[in-house]
Amino acid sequence: MANLTEPAPQPSLGNYYIGIMSGTSLDGIDVVIAQRSRSGFKQIAACSPALPEALRLQILKICQDKQVTLQMLGEVDHQFALACAEAVNQLLKNSNINAQQICAIGSHGQTIFHSPLGKFPFSQQIGDANLIAARTGIPCVADFRRMDMAYGGQGAPLVPAFHHALFSKNGKNRVIVNIGGIANITLLSEDKPLLGYDTGPGNMLMDGWINKVKNQPFDKNADFAKHGKVSSLLLTQLLSDPYFALPAPKSTGREKFNLDWLEQQLTEIDGALLSDADIQRTLLELSAQTISQQIKQSSAGGDVFVCGGGALNPLLMQRIQSLLPLHTVNDTNALDIDPMFVEAIAFAWLAEQRLLKAPIALKSVTGARQDAILGCVYLA
Image 1 (cartoon, rainbow, N blue to C red):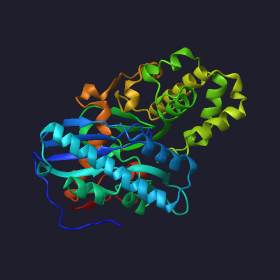
Image 2: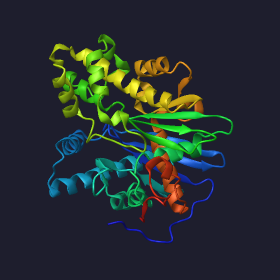
Image 3: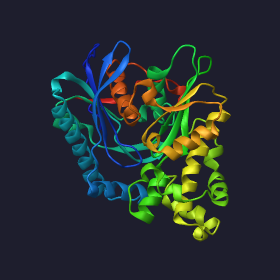
Image 4: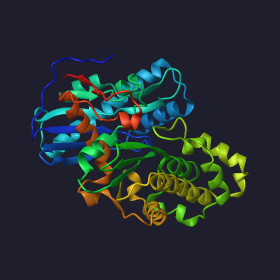
């Protein structure tokens, strides 16, 4: 249960915040120290320690099997929180910043199941915020999704509100694309409500496939995909999934797009005739096309800025640019924000907003009946 105690500490300009993000790729824990300034949030220091391999495999098993004992769930919840706290403490030490200088930590937690559309919608994250607060000595804000869901929203994606706060600019339309395990887009327009949603797989299927056939965690520089060719038959089959045609609001995750899903699609077209590299290349094309199609269908003008691990995939970035000839595609370095830490900074910002008791303007994104104050405060 949430340990919500009021009044929460009140932030002021110049304070430091920490954001923690671990996405669907399960490649590590992104931790960032950010400082509030009058112009926004400035990244001060960051790190991305890998998850302990045994813990990563346990979480992956939970997500893939969708079954877990209560003992295992409790222990993994505890272990993940300890890994987060250790990463925070190490970053503070390396940065010569002490815990007393930090106003709050914003922790997303690791999503193990996201089910926004059933009769009883829910989204489940692990990473006990009590432990994070106790082990760091810093108030921790967590459980950001469920209040939005309590008001009928999907609880995801959350980052469009931060994208609007940090990246919107008068006189300019912009598209922010986050390519983590799942890809999502945020449409920033002067004359339209904020809109953002999950387009489908980002890196997740590519990472899962190369891990299966090459025992590699990801396809560095798309070296494996470059040896393959796009299978139009497989691509058409993948694109036929109903999710891609759903209107916004919509959100998804590993419970939908996973290797079991991919194997089923391969079975439908006798995918045994395809090389492993061809499948890898086609999965990359799936991500590029589903992202680009949604941007084109939105009629959103302006430049496109990419963040997340996908920003480091040169072939994926090239394909998105090729599919969007009327747009200029860059990563968020062009906006002075490291693309690898945009999401972590977003949770530092969300922590600040919670301490300010500020509602997060997400109802146009998630479909909630109203904007809400998101997150619970766990005091150290």
